[in-house]
Length: 196
Image (cartoon, rainbow, N blue to C red):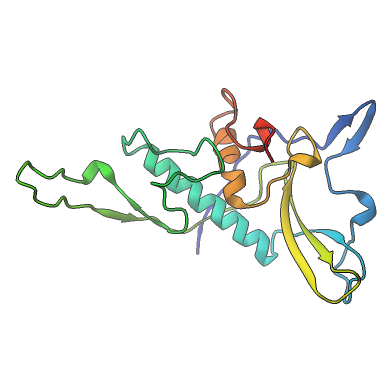
């Protein structure tokens, strides 16, 4: 059973302004469906409930990566900690729950002996929910009315509106870390910097 984490800090906005018009911070209403159509004929968005496997996957990935980043930042390794952008650095392993603990590693003496490198395995974690105001949506694209479909998943809630949605847990992780630190300073995620 994964350990449950909850983040209560948020910057999400339920509405945003376009010109003089106030709009909801969700996908276009004309494309939203309440339940999954059996044979979709057009593109649509569907809000995913927390018990949906994709929502569970996102929340597990976010929690596990968040805890791993916090563990790295507490290990006195200046190059670790919460990422400042959605692009993983080359020294960060993004797909494992095992992290290296540099503070317990010994450095090789001048004789050239190899160093020992101790690995720490973290337990599994899950966010109980996305930060308040953030919602996960499935976007289904139907290819010219055919039965071939493409499914993409987007996290909505960014205070600058729907064009700044998050495309993956890795895309949202820098923002989640920034939220967890009380929104101090400037967020380093791509959508906050106008790159999406």
